[in-house]
Length: 129
Image 1 (cartoon, helix red, strand yellow):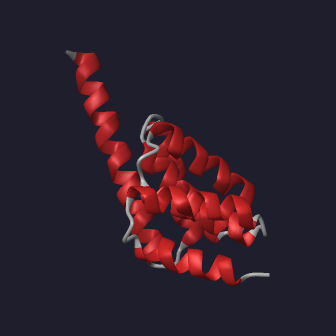
Image 2 (cartoon, one colour):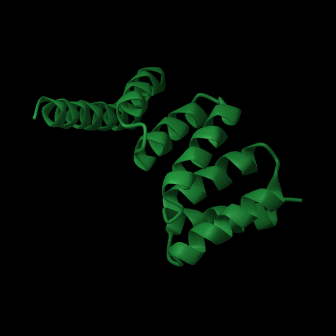
């Protein structure tokens, strides 16, 4: 019973830090958002969204390799998330890895053909020389 209670508390704390990270990110407080996301990942180590949120924070702080690593872990945990594929494409595009970015966009659009950000990103990538 105590083990179950501890697990529930850990989940609740992890969800709190995940939500807090997203709120900080929305407020353009990325350093603090990253710290909160790191706490969420520690508590929710098998939670795809926690890695996605941390990856987004990493990308906003120009920590592109760390962002890609987080997006990859998120996709290992849940390959059916169009937003994570789009996030990966975003970072790959920033790094000039156009073909890989387009492949990630295609994954996102296969999951959600109307995903607006992915459609815009694909258009921009195709316009790149």
